[in-house]
Length: 302
Ligand code: 13P
Ligand code: SF4
Image 1 (cartoon, rainbow, N blue to C red):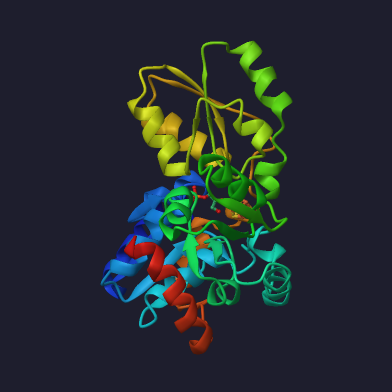
Image 2: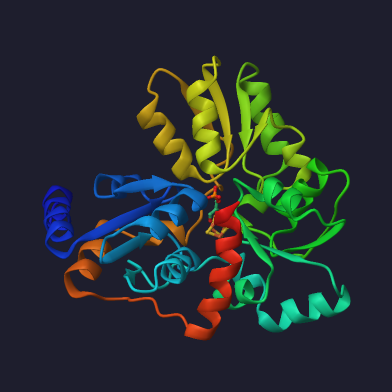
């Protein structure tokens, strides 16, 4: 079947079944043709919480669909491809979180949204890359435990001089692969270009950036900036969308290696298949979901 026909069938099914499609900015760009909302994790979780659709198809990775289910338990949440996990979220499980907490007792735990429902259920508050600094500041604690992303946690600690952020040693392999040499090489070739980076990158990389922010924040900054050329230091999906949306500006991927293989698993065919046949429904244990809901809700209320 041609993409055009698949898109038409998906759009027809969305109306018939009162479904919406949420797509992360790292998805294959053609998925935007059927997406109702495209954006970063914070934006998409807000959309999942407030939609009155009966079905949410989450074009993203497993923890995102799981978070949507926790926020909207009465809705059917479908994941186009069940293999699309997040390697960083899988770097900490409940046992490891408990050990981490035991080593540092009585310190509040901030969990990045890129984590399992179980990890969320035993954390105090959730955050995304868009609001991590604000969330930790709002806690008002002198020390916090930050899981699972050591790079985002370190970045938060550097922004908040009065808070000691103790990080768990997890990371996103896609962002961790990016090196300071990648940036300096690109800067040598394109000296006018501004460097826009995601806080999942190492601190040595972030130190070389002109702007640090979530995927949506990077896109907003690029659209509003007077500069015409940008080196984009995050997953390639952001570069693809920027090129499409702002054709008069130049967007350069920092490296060919900045691709998240899990994010790229979902296809238009998969979306049609799950929507047509109600497949790959996400279920979360109700006890865990209730506790995880509180952790996410605290963040959303901020
Ligand atoms: P944001 O959506 O918060 O920019 O995070 C990127 C990411 O890695 C999602 O998996
Ligand atoms: Fe997980 Fe990294 Fe992929 Fe985001 S880009 S889904 S953090 S592996």
